[in-house]
Image (tube, rainbow, N blue to C red):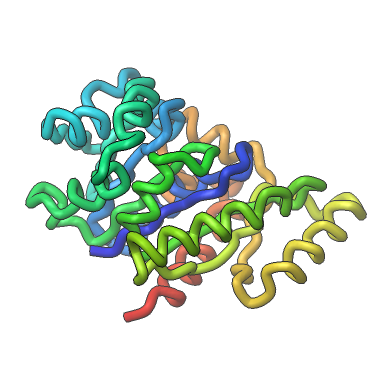
Length: 251
């Protein structure tokens, strides 16, 4: 089982999109049994697949009620809901507050999965800390915006604390430049700035801004599951990113 967390304390950088699309790619295109885990109280990952989240991550941690929802062939979801805000408050001050997700994924119900992909909230709170403590690998999405690198130091400091105290084997797979538009000069300059800052940590594949992603969410499918020429470019980007992701994972 390989556990990957998608995190960045900034909102709007595409954590949910990348978790969703790469989960669909791994399951639909590569045949891996994959679980998506929505660790965000906003539940946007869950809303992209379900009308109602039902019992999910909150109940799995607090009540040991594990209700995993099938999304498509070889792809399942452990949903998130507003109750995760309550969980965050409950875990603060608990001695084992940061290892709840790690303990959860050790249960038998999760053993069939080849991949577990975790979408995290836009914060460095205890839910994100739990996901980092449970993960094998980290992917950090960023956008080519004027504020792309703000707060990066805080995230890197949090990662080092997690490695020192809870998860020394956590490995950073890399940084994904997401929602990129090559049309503007400022966009190109900011892309160069991001690449310069992160160096080899940057994935070669860049994900372009596209209305097709929102349309795929409306269809409740991943891009790679849709047919038609209008999907070709974003599908190719997701596939390249998925291949690069797999190539970066240590055997």
